[in-house]
Length: 202
Ligand SMILES: C[S@@+](CC[C@H](N)C(=O)[O-])C[C@H]1O[C@@H](n2cnc3c(N)ncnc32)[C@H](O)[C@@H]1O
Image 1 (cartoon, rainbow, N blue to C red):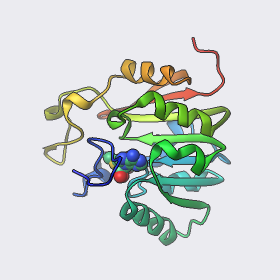
Image 2 (image 1 turned 90 degrees about the vertical axis):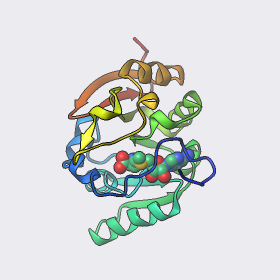
Image 3 (image 1 turned 180 degrees about the vertical axis):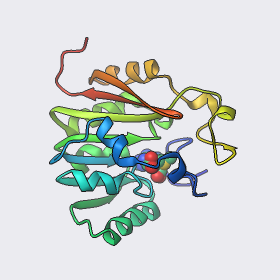
């Protein structure tokens, strides 16, 4: 349990080395949810930067944001070691994304949305950060019993009761004013769901 004020419930960064097993190809995940060459991109709640590095290899600029200063530093060092210099690093609350990162083409939030207490407020902040036609991509654990989502022989991920179905996620984000675009399956246990600013909701 984190003691940082404002920390979203059930969003602690895993520290036992199984993340890399679960996500062997983070660049492919980013491509599948719509990251494009030249984007001004945001890794919102970036954790230790596992997705931030491949994001920075495609995007023109990356803004990596997390509430935990220690993790922001791990991310900064990961990119520095890789010789990647097109990123800025911000210790901050996700609700402050607009003041930290506007205007953006692509905002990515992986393994966090289930823990956000006021999702409509978060989506409004994301919407205020995005350019017209900009993309908000969420990666979530499927709403499956935690006992079933096993990685390296142990159940992993947020508690079963915190998990959100694609439909629940869609409703939350549409309530905040972004338009649903598509869902992508990210086996074995995740889905990506892509929204856009400026489309007429269907
Ligand atoms: C499960 S980790 C996922 C990290 C990264 N997105 C990934 O998938 O590899 C969740 C992250 O959310 C961050 N976090 C929690 N509450 C936050 C908040 N209010 N604002 C910004 N970051 C937050 C945590 O510090 C943690 O790094």
